[in-house]
Image 1: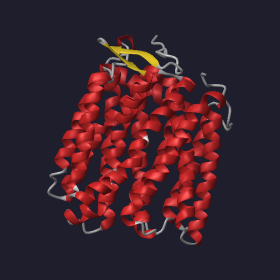
Image 2: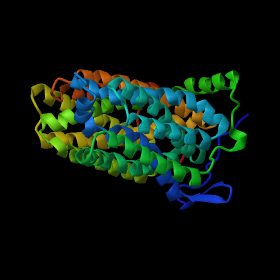
Image 3: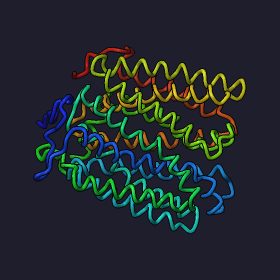
Length: 423
């Protein structure tokens, strides 16, 4: 029987015994590299937000609300690609699928810069999402190959903290790009960032999947891996819940430019408001890394979820009464996303923790469900946008309630217990 891979290092160590050939990688560089691999996905989403008006004008999009499908198309490819890559990464390891995926990401970004029409751009965004799927699959699987339990939650928090630097600066960078040149330069910037990260991974990222833990790429092995994932109630519920919350977040991303730019009149300054919320999420990840080992993933994330629902309810009710003033809205959004960060990091760690023997397949299943489900919910919320923050607030509130129901199913109706956690 295939055993759970042992952690390769204690999380308090500064270096880890992860090597390929003569190369070794320290813990800090490993975290930074995994974070930047994941951040390419954020770049492909957030750097485009300031360019929506220019893309719509340049490609003659008749309905301005249709521009959001540039994000949705990417997320569709991202979700489908993850479902395919999981079993492949469990068979061939983490490095080769990652490098192939990054190559596709870069080529699609370059091609998108030369799109003759909106339909072509949408198709290329699907292809780019397919390539980017490797970033999530490999990043999470590599961390799970190396850590487990609360140590995994701590490392994922640190990864997310570094990762958040890119979403913080990406909209501002995108704004500078469209001020300096045409919207096509956005895709040139994506391609350049993809090449830099691909080079770093090629030189420094070792293979984290041990040969004895590789699974054959056969129908029986693949179906067996999926069976292991789908039959674990706790893992499934904690894997699904972040997808529902991501739906609310994607709904906000789809409408962030008109909310900040039009409702609150920030215009080209909206990336700075966007970045301030990202900074709060980065701080939240750092705090989680410090407290999760002491208090446990469940008490931290369950408490955060209750707070998330309460604050989202305030947003929803306030929006029913009228437009929320800018500063209260920004503070409310920052507080909600602070809690979102605590929830998502720990829920993802708890979903992966019992599935170390099929980490790639598990990452692909949860990644697909979270991305595809989140993209669908986000598109519904975005399509309902009516020039107010009402429907986005409603999306956050309802998503929080659904996530709570899933947690109660996972925990047999009990919250805050730590009996399953590995310290």
